[in-house]
Length: 113
Length: 114
Image (cartoon, rainbow over all chains, first blue to last red; front, side):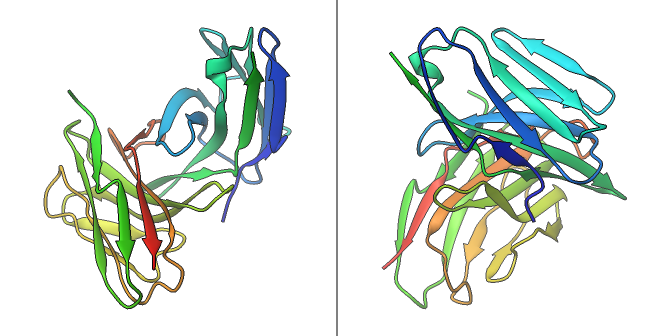
């Protein structure tokens, strides 16, 4: 089952604008991760935020996590055409000795030059 | 160069055939994963392995099989029992089985059933 749900499904902006993508999930998590996928390629890890953290930054990326609302957001500032890709959130769960990530369906971001 | 390699990049299969997708990593990671991605969809977990000679079913294991005889390798076999195997298959690894591990992905194999 897919835990994370990204919103919107698709987002089109102009270069230089900020892009915000949201992720909601249903059950408690240990961490939430954001990944990027260029068309036809593998996923690249962007950032990991733990359940006891509220905000994290990495370069032009800002991630927030609200565990009370079971939601996260990814903000890309000053977007570039090269940011065009699909962005996925993935929630980390652990139970016993098992650990796995559950991915959402992604947000397709298009940055127009 | 450290990373994960998958081969082949494209694979064509006739109905009723088994095919094996290769995944190799030189990151010295204990855990490895196989995912399936359909168009416009997220990733669904097929199998994962936390350590050599051990693996667990994911959410959609039916019609697939795996082995983990070496730390570096986690091949996936798509059997004839998988009714709709056409998809993009992604292999990943992570450094541990704790709660806070990012996954590193290979470039993927696109499987098409003719």
